[in-house]
Length: 115
Length: 113
Image 1 (cartoon, one colour):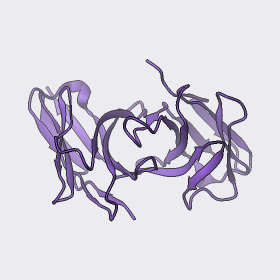
Image 2 (cartoon, helix red, strand yellow; image 1 turned 90 degrees about the vertical axis):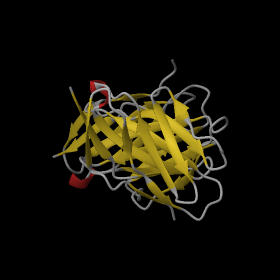
Image 3 (tube, helix red, strand yellow; image 1 turned 45 degrees about the horizontal axis):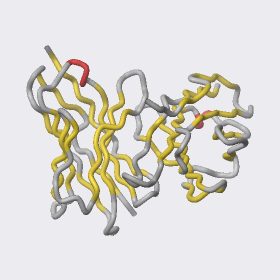
């Protein structure tokens, strides 16, 4: 069964460092997303990406964040200068946006710990 | 703006019994989707079931069914014949068309032998 894969599964970094989280969406999907979940809290939308550009972003997705699809398979989230409050689980998701609009398939998440 | 409310922070159920997890929503959109995801302690988000706002029949997927009451803006998840492996956090979410999901705060379900 096709799946969304994310790397790394866990990253520990110092405050102020740059972090890149990587995702390989399901191959025939067209819509890509990043969500985050601070420990013990609900999942929050960060950004959606379609046709090689950001289609929507939340207020959380400020200038410290960027996304990129550098090739035909990877989808990355970059945090330029991490803050303590960026510690969270980051989920990548993708959808075909056709049969069941908005049905998202999530990766297993990348846990970011900022010290 | 969309809003999802899950009023049950935690639920307990015995193995083999049915359990209902509550979800109410608020939206001004005519077209939307409702979802339930399961998050076990390992952290991944597992898609369980989907209901479109124009679907007249309640969605079912194996032991999961979604009790969709549009007039009451509720989308409760019913798990029949609970199993120990059902112990997890359950999130209700809604989408606007092809767009993003808004999640509720979740309900922790514990299934006891």
